[in-house]
Length: 156
Figure 1 (cartoon, rainbow, N blue to C red):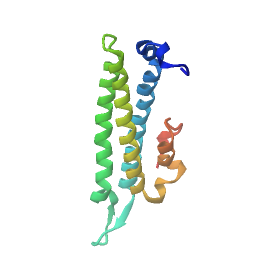
Figure 2 (tube, rainbow, N blue to C red):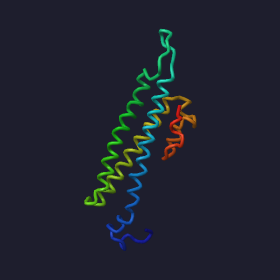
Figure 3 (tube, rainbow, N blue to C red):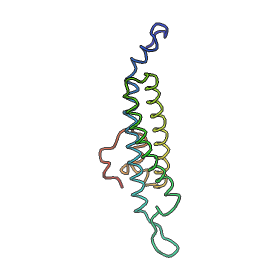
Figure 4 (spheres, rainbow, N blue to C red):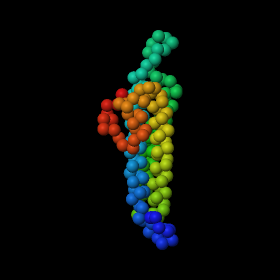
């Protein structure tokens, strides 16, 4: 790997780093799961958190467009990324496909999923106020981690 590139044909090099692309697809799938979890946490918070309305009644914050847009956008993105993941895995496993195309599929899936998931995580956790920063609510932990937390069923 540290020698000159002329000594190793490109096809041999690409075959030797094939596991990197496999890891890109596999580890990025965890990011999509994290997005689903953040959307769930944000939605549950928005349904539970209330404010006093003009008619002296409590209104859940999910009624506000500023709360709905990031949560519903994140939900839609999670569904699209799950479908993209399925397509990427199937396409990546196609042995007849050129190895460069397979690496490209892995790279596209990784870039799209990671950028979308990070942006959605920040937008949703921001709508949860200080509670979005609490470690036990796991939104900040999911933003910096690529693993699902152990107690993800106990959020909010």
